[in-house]
Amino acid sequence: MIEYICYINFKENIMKKFSKIFLILMVFLLVSCSTNKKEKQKNASNTSNTEIITSIKKQEYNLDPKLSNSLNNDSVISQLFEGLTEYSSHGKIALNQAESIEKSEDLKKWTIKLRDNLKWSDGSNITAEDYVQSWISILNNANKNPNAFKLFFIKDAKKLYDGKIKPNEFKGIKITDKNTIEVNMEYPVKNFDEILSNVFMFPTKKDSKIDKESLITNSAFKLKSYTDEEIILEQNENYWDNVNTKIKKVTLKLVENDILAYQLFDLKQIDFFGLPFYEIPYERRLDSSKKPELLNFKTNIFEFLKLDKNSKILKNDTLRKNLEKLIDPKFLAEFVLYNNSVPIVQKEKLVSEQITKLKNEVDEILKSSNLQNEILTLKHNGTKLSERILASLSKEWIDKYKIKVSIKSEGNSEITHSIFNMGTTDEMDIKYYINHYLQNDDFSKMYTSIEDIQKENLIFPLYKRSFSVLVHNNIQGLYVSPNGLLLIKNLLKQ
Image (cartoon, rainbow, N blue to C red; front, side, top):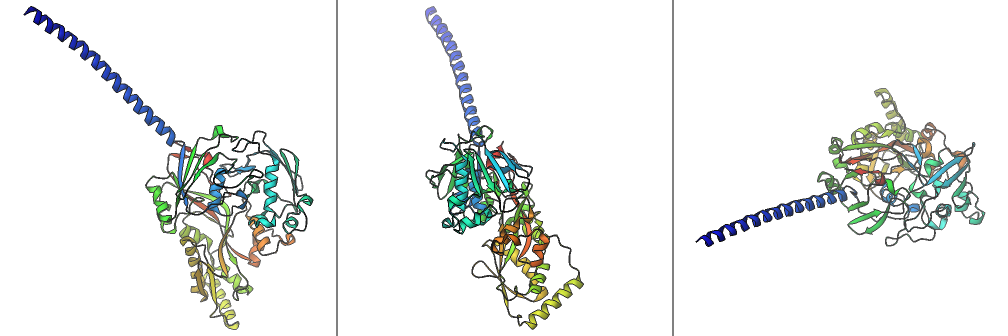
């Protein structure tokens, strides 16, 4: 009996000790599991804080910066490539891949020195030759580059493009050493440093292929994959300012429907939504204008109506001027765009006596020229917003002047809703567009004031477009520059 009791006591002691050990082990395991779980959550948090996700229009993107010619395309290219300068968040031009830029007193010679530590994503050195080769290829007529005319201010660039001189005779752009470029101008250019910030001025590696499989880049990111559903960018370890780039991965979701793309923001599936990646759809502009997450950024991108003077109505100077006088860019900005886009030409509101006078002038000309049944055709860019802009301004022509108007998305038209981006902060740089398309590149006709442009009415100026962007409050540093670029490398995500 005593032995049995002793055995029981012994067994109880053993069980107590075992229980203590078991409890200690369980606590250890629970703490360990909890620590591992927290560590995993922490790692996941760190990963998500270094990735930016947004939606872009589903289309084929040209990955060659020299050929980029749209806001959507520029938005993608500018994450992969960069140039000698870029705009700071204060709207001022800043050195980027350039170490220094000097200009002559007469503004006809610019000298650019590159940084010493520049490398392509494959680890090879970026040199002045890469830049110069890229720029000269723009001026090769065989490439049919839509941006070529934007470089005609360079000495003999137009002659090179027209085949009047050979490439080895072209002295407008020179390499003075492996890191230094000299650019000579046809006439004084005061803001060449701003023009250098354009996507079409970004270099590509000499003799490299521009394709999805082996793209060599020079900005903070390189191309990881490109599918029908998304474009994924990853960190470029060879980027010269990589240490200051906090975002390591970018996912660009390719979305065909603009309403669906917009809704992804409300569902918190993307970090931001808006231009230059995706235009906020017209049907959601009023709704978005009331959201606290909305930011508006002023750009120097010109929005205007391109005219075709083959139109019987537009051939008449008085009719053309009177049509322009009824355009109210301020109204379009406030009640169609729902943002702070700035009119290119400031106008005073017309009083009833002025409108009556204009109506009588138009009516007399239409009757005397037998143009009462002539139809003025307007062409939009295929978006609902562009269509609404044309519908709004043409309503005044129809109501006040009784002019017949047709709005189409394709086909021949007398007036086209257009944009132009020279990448600068000077509103007069619309002169480059006018000089090329309407003055046959005759530099002697280059305009010097907006008032002169308005007098001849070669275009109907509207406004300098503001870009609207919806952004969640955990994203910092989001900024759209005067040339319409939004650089993801500058973002911080909390």
